Length: 288
Image (spheres, rainbow, N blue to C red):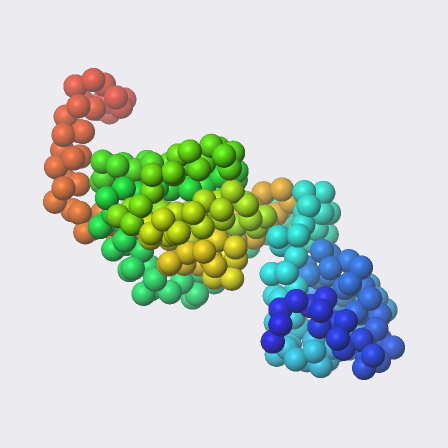
């Protein structure tokens, strides 16, 4: 089934009952709000019963309202402007405790990510990183910290890691122009998807590099331009993109790569510990 709810509504409009037409009209005009409403709230908003909303979802071909709501959310996340995000968040939070709402949302995204992450794709990504001559990490705007975090740890394991973040599209291409078939590129992109990251991934793939996309769905612009896709569920609360699940995927990548380079990594850190101690890099712990 198509996940474009607006197209489905247009195709089925003539068959709708009076109540269903009210639901359809509200979704068309306020899809950014409707996608985050419960069936009960959507029904009260348009003046129909909750059961009418549920039947409407089933009549459209969905398993139930949650399936229709998920399809709506996937459609709207990349369309929301910053102003709309603030409005949606305000409606979602209501009188709830903000801390509890955000923490529970993050925990749910972690649970969903654990369920959907393809372990075969994950293993292939780890192997691609290990065999690469050079590793490039692309992440701009809000996902820049993820790229820097991954780059920080991979730099302990490899001598040729390049983090490309915070650059314009033109500057990005200047950084990745020499990418070739011996390289692996790890790119991050979540709604609202960065056009420069997608273009960078397209270029790297056309140059023969192995592209690992860390994104929220295989159908995202980055996912469609990657050799291996690691799906990490994301969500937005007001202007903030929840990157808890993507960061957990990054942690898992670091641990998996480190376990395959245990001998080399042990030697590296033995040398580092000596240097850190000699040059007082860290505060020394004293007995009290």
